[in-house]
Length: 164
Image (tube, rainbow, N blue to C red; front, top):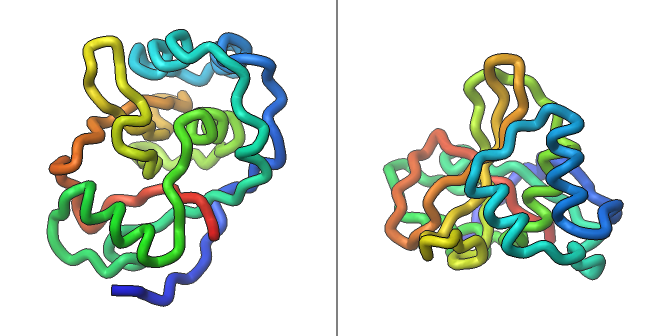
């Protein structure tokens, strides 16, 4: 099903100012952005320059119910099919993590997940993750959520995707 989605731009990232992931992690600490251990694990394990060919890119927030027409709890793999069928793309993990520095909305308790490719963020235990960002207790966070095909998400959930 292809739906007419109102484009709600989340953010545009023009380039990557960091030479490697350690610099990005240091910037999180400098700006008091709390990264959970899985984000730190990914950044340390993949300490390489963020690919510049990923930029510029525009990211959009899609609500599963309003924008994708999902009316009941759905599997991640099915959500990803709808995202792609509507002309959007999944977000590379390094773009998602960098985006946390730029998104400063302060809605306590709001968590927005990035639609990253399955198996793109594997921790040292072999568990796939996708990043999610939020704000609470007067802090910005970047954490992770499980990213396996049968993970269930609800119509109220939002995902960040790459624009067309």
